Length: 194
Image (cartoon, rainbow, N blue to C red; front, side, top):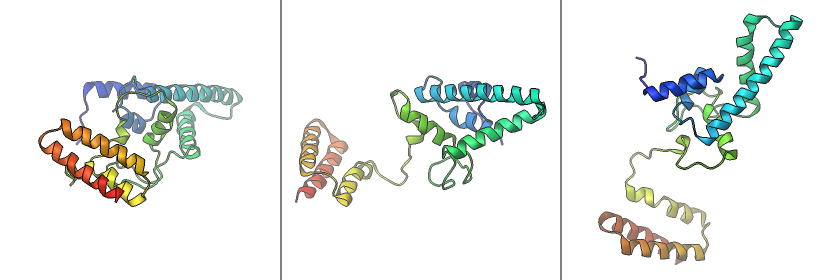
């Protein structure tokens, strides 16, 4: 059964394919808006790569080294080398909340993340950062940073005191279940001071 995507996502898919992205890359990256700063950089990089490839291909065609029918396979080999050289291949295989891509296959999200590091900051959260936490209540998710601080011992006492002050201020403004959650978090922070 084929997946059905929204019309705008189908349009973004077609746009990416027309910009020399593979079907796998276009399928994954079509979840992003076209104006995403990192995606703009990825598209610019791909168009530059394709322009260089076409210059090389035309020279090799003139010299008789390549045949015209070999160009699509040569382009795919070029992209495969790029993924290998830049370390953008799937390392572990599908674990957790990831697309099911076999180990060693090209990972478009690794490519996107590398460009996201150098892109101007955009508002919102990147899709690859979204993690669904199953079996956890809101309270348990709120305590995760405290548990990490307890395990690492990485938070300084001044920072813990500052967090307690922020929790106290938030408790004064909160009501109901949120207030209870904040009190539990504050109590956990106070135990770090003991």
